[in-house]
Length: 400
Ligand code: DGY
Image 1: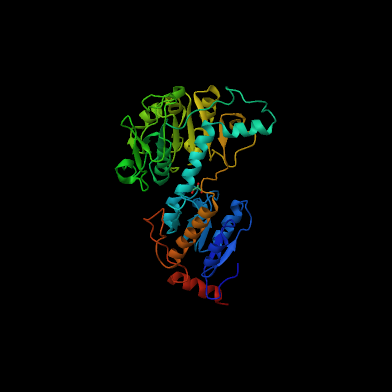
Image 2: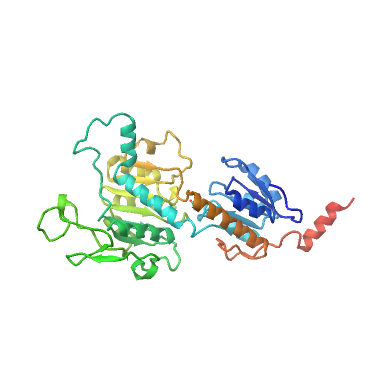
């Protein structure tokens, strides 16, 4: 990427991201692009950090205390993600380095994937696909690949941030009952009532004949002529009402939910939040969906729970170690659907994330905190070119 003549700023971009966003960044700074989808080796990353004023990083780049300490002119770390668990926030704050991230723009896209994984695990979509491709589909039979109903079931959302609420909104369209629990360490506001106004896209309701409500456009019939309209055909439970969500303690959520969606950031308080005890406390046959971070679950315990059948299935976009080893026992289990950390991976969302990551850097170059700052308590480091000490250093290197 060519350097603009007037700029003395350098930005290291650790992976190819949307060209349009990079071009905008290049109007202000010299952009050093790591032009490979594989991450730069850690020592290479540190070597680049030494030279740059900002880094546009990915969740798979480890920006630990050592890397930050080795970057004397670094002003900003701008992560192309909402999560910042790959960054030592304490070290960044202490060093005066602002950390930007990209919340908001990826909410709906990530919630889409959480729902896709839930449906796929419940209705054995990936397993069915493998079955057909293997030439094993011989005939239609009434017992082939029976799965679980998502509609009318109870969804438990753990973590009531933007993404958790967006998953809950989708559940409204499936007539699900929604329970939610704020995660340990969640700040104020994460327990706000969904039905009480936190839902930005309320679903219009139509009245059901038995007094219940259904998302509009949904028609129900009993399957038996002349009956009241209550859905009980084939033993299915009655569909539940339009989106509303009840805040409950984690223990109740685990005991009552048919599906559990994890939507928490990875912090010391949420690491292994779901371990042996929590898995045992889940309803037999429950399905666990994780689009947050793999380390939120004790993966070895989850494998045991899946093997025993206590956990009915899992839809995972994230794993404890990424990428997961091809020999990992998780990959041997038929009741698991795994995607390669693609929660926010739509064309439009990745473009928005790249634009926002660039905005965060430009904010810092303009002397402000990034518009989405993960360490707002940071006292921004004075850029070297403006600091008296930096002038001294410059003079020294320019001398004989
Ligand atoms: C995030 O935003 O934290 C995702 O995991 C990366 O898209």
